[in-house]
Amino acid sequence: MKEKGRVTEVYGLRAKINLEPSEACKHCHASAFCQPAGNARVIEAENSIGANIGDEVYIEILARTGFIAIFFVFCLPVMLGLIGLLLGAQYSNTHSIFYGLVGFALGLIIAKIVNDNFRSKHKFLPKIIEIVRPKGS
Image (tube, rainbow, N blue to C red):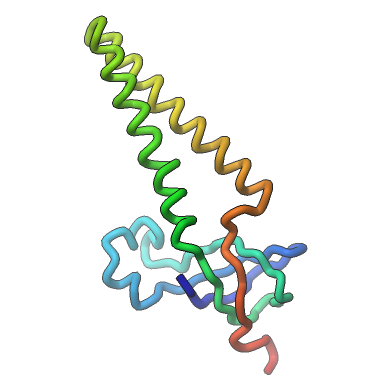
């Protein structure tokens, strides 16, 4: 997915980008989660093309990145919580609730570890692919 934004910070080979709501966001049911109160989203992107503060840029976000994030943040904790519920149900309702909560918490911990690992290795980071209008031109 290709989106347009403005560079607000540059540090090393990374930049912070303010993304304005796109036309697709107006029709998306999840847009309230991405842009609470209609504000621009701020994301971190790889800046291998040398964009500067104030530049308008296009960034590319891979679709698989979103699917992987959704799996680890939403699906994995719920799946592990359900497995815990089912395992605990063999013993009692109290065990079921306890194992369900432990499974859910374990899923969140795994999601955090995976996120930190990907972040430190710069995996799945969006990339600036084009400068639309350099600052001052």
